[in-house]
Length: 319
Image 1 (cartoon, rainbow, N blue to C red):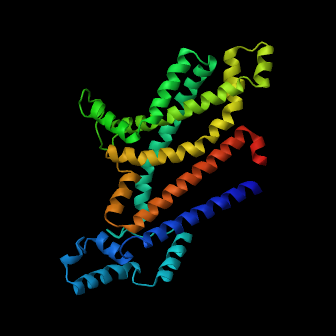
Image 2: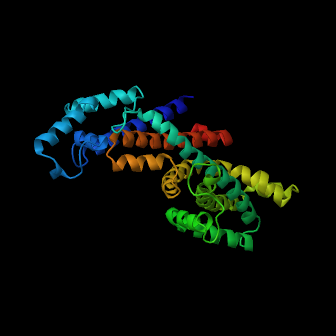
């Protein structure tokens, strides 16, 4: 229990550091926070020479006052830190809506894509890896390894464009509607994410299974009359389970980053679209909130991987 309390405290400290670093980066961005707020509110044109200097200064001051951006930097930092402690992400510069409400709506779609792709990847990748490990060097192993290496090497953006052009754009097929947020429109995004994730799980599981099937426990099971199928499914897979679960700590952050590209390609209203839109209009609270949400997702996935690995192999809990 003490070990898990330490891990949770370390996770909270890491998220705190991410929040402070993100705030500092936005403060150091070109222009002032007050100018960013004015741009986000739409009261300030991008061209600095479009307005008289006096009018420009008044518009910036009027936009800064409601958000406390006219105060010194140390006061703004203290206010931001206190809001984070209270789990208050502030309000959008553009429309004044709470950042947490907008993130909750968009993050749910992104999390659904990542979780669905992760489940498919583990199911398909582990199944194919069992076939590879049953006869290393066979034709199944050769084809699966080659296809897995090819999929990993292909950029996610290119795979998304290819899928849109071939399966949604009508050249040559139009099986799935592009965008729209319907269930059918999510098939291609989940498919793209799960393809890459499946290739990663396949290669990792193949190596783990080939190694564990030659361990003394597996060889002893063969000596006692166990079939090769039982050795793979029970003994080898059981010994490789903790390694496969630990892969989740790396796979989930990768899928989160890939999902941002896929969401933009398929015009999905997820976290990626929200961050791109907020960055384009200088909406700093949305960018900060999205960064914290991504950090919390990565940290949570890492803790979940540790917990599941400990459940599979209790010896890991003592480390």
